[in-house]
Length: 116
Ligand code: AMP
Image 1 (cartoon, rainbow, N blue to C red):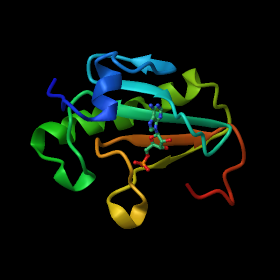
Image 2 (cartoon, rainbow, N blue to C red):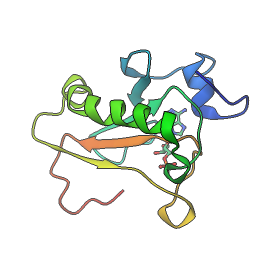
Image 3 (cartoon, protein in one colour):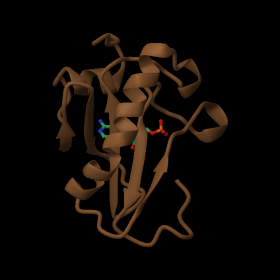
Image 4 (cartoon, rainbow, N blue to C red):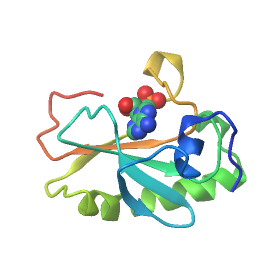
């Protein structure tokens, strides 16, 4: 996997910063968000550093696809029972703050009024 020296999610992937892990395999790590925006808020992070959804090349496309396919299991492992919202923040106007692509999974409550 290709990781970045200074990226906070790469540091989590390398085990240099602790995380509250929900799921891990060779392609991704899913852990609970440190500032949850819903009762359950998990981030799924691919094990390769690229900053933006818009930078997804051929290799990353497969990796992100695997992450997406795994979300139902990750949500179940996180204790979500009645559905969830999936969000990717792309760039400045979306409020992206960590520049390593990640997928937000939000649930554990009715998400009707709650935008991330
Ligand atoms: P985004 O705004 O899409 O870039 O989301 C970045 C998310 O990463 C935010 O929801 C943060 O709360 C979360 N976050 C930042 N640092 C950590 C950390 N060390 N552990 C868990 N979540 C984090």
